[in-house]
Length: 80
Image 1 (cartoon, rainbow, N blue to C red):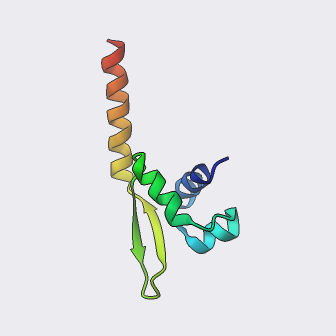
Image 2: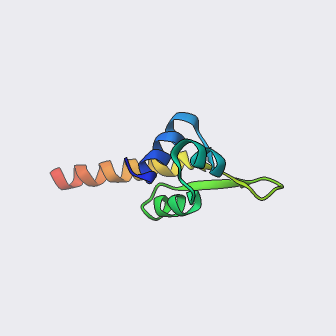
């Protein structure tokens, strides 16, 4: 399983992920880079920054649903 797949699975199950969780659970030391790659392919996330400048990443569920709808609509248009 790729790092991106691990992060997506974690977000689906728990709703958020921090760098500390990524390192401890999956040995992902560059979570921001994984999040950046996910955002480039349409899995949009947003970050909540704490006072100590650590980030917690959350999926943008409305954007994900819109991407799924667009993808399915495209499939319908192709099959008609």
